[in-house]
Amino acid sequence: MPFHYFQPFPSRRSPVMGKNGAVATSHPLAAQIGIQILADGGNAIDAAVAVAAALTVLEPTSNGLGSDAFAIIWDGTKLHGLNASGRSPKELSLKEVKSKSKLTSGQPSIPFDGWLPVTVPGAVSAWMALTEKFGSIPLSRLVEPAARYAETGHPVPPIIAHYWSFAEKRFAHREDFRTTFLPNGRGVRPGEIFSCPEQARTLRLIGESNGEAFYQGELADAITDYAAKTGGYLTKVDLVEHRPEWVEPISTNYRGYDIWEIPPNGQGIVALIALKILEGFELDRYPLLSSKRLHLVIEALKLAFADAHRYVADPDLVHVPTRELLSKAYAKERRKLIDPNQAMPSPNPGDPLGDTVYLCTADKDGRMVSYIQSNYMGFGSGVVVPGTGIALQNRGCGFSLEDGHPNQYAPGKRSYHTIIPSFITKDGIPLAAYGVMGGDMQPQGHLQVVSNIVDYQLNPQAAIDAPRVRVLNEGGIAIEPMINPEVVRELAKLGHTIRIDAEMAGFGGGQMIWRDPETGVYIAGSEPRKDGQALAL
Figure 1 (spheres, one colour):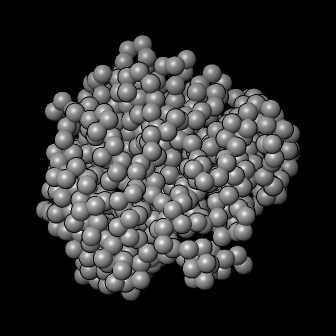
Figure 2: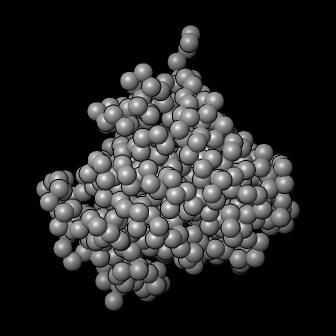
Figure 3: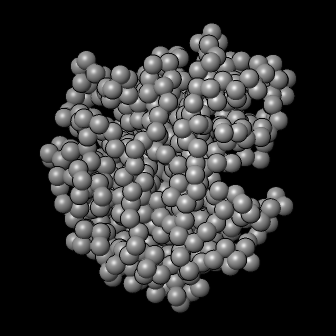
């Protein structure tokens, strides 16, 4: 090519508007599949499943057939939540995990790659559950566009290619990964065509069997046989017994708007805790990107993460004090810890008694879907089941190995989960499906996007465009370089340790569809930090 793919200048995106449906996601070709499903008479749930299947092919750097998934659905009358996260292998003991753990910052942790962090993939079960409960088109038809792209190939856009190069460094030593995802022995470059006929066959098997092949048929055999041959832990029992769970979303009210998340084992509660704390401050007194407003956002997030890391775990096995963590009284007590003039050190949890794809869809009848799907860290564990194109997630890294911790590893358990879809309603009226990708940036992005709209009246696209900050696990904060250097200096004077980070995807990848309740018009926005696109009918 006579040019490069760097984008040296700011680029303006307008909100996309339509009356008969909308789709927004992180890959334009996937968005086009969703909008075609709507144009052909499918509903928002059909479109969401088709886009989710397509993203496993088009953006394998962030998700795949071995992913987990979560969704919030407005069916025209009420909200439904779906938790399709998988459990740890039943035959993998805590003792075995500890014996093969590694030290991270002086603490034992589960390795990021190989079989040890692999949990049961839940994404395919999400497609099955959504199609069965709300769909109007057979799963076999919904996965076919994805299968065609896997079979005939698709050009890889710049940001996805950038992350593919990381996988080359991580997994080039693995023959199973190299054979499937490193053609010519390297990552796929921008504009190159990538195909994976094995994925096409797998997708068609999933469609023809309505997903059963993945959990108790030919694909299940391939996964468990490979595990048995190569030191893995997944068994047929793990796959056969997997079930997604329909759950009641949790919420908090922020200045008259109800913000909804999936309950634990996900980290959506972080956004809700932090919003409840922030509601006690008059944020709109301060400019959007002022040091005073950003300081309050940062401090609220620190407190929320401290609580989530202490209490969030699999609610089937331990008690998670969700109601107490979201109470006004608890928010008031935590709010007292924030000093407007001084950054706090890493806070302790209170006592109330870690890449991803996101998509949203909406249809002409008012149904809306907020959906998220991920292999966790890039391609996940690096384990690829030969002949299938199935890259298995490494979601087991989300467990703690601390004795007595609610999120401590156990067989048959769901880990602390980073991927979170979100939804906004007001007085029972559905307003927006939205999400922000990116590990622990997700609840931080949720909070900042909501505040941008509610406190500063930004439209969905501008709310997503706005520069962000990120509280870091290792301490300190990351700030996007578009934020005024004087604001950065003021934050440093307050005691914040600051890293200016030009890696845009570290600040998330958001999409949103907002519905005007008076006109029924959809207003959609797509993240400029990703390759994505918003489309409407």
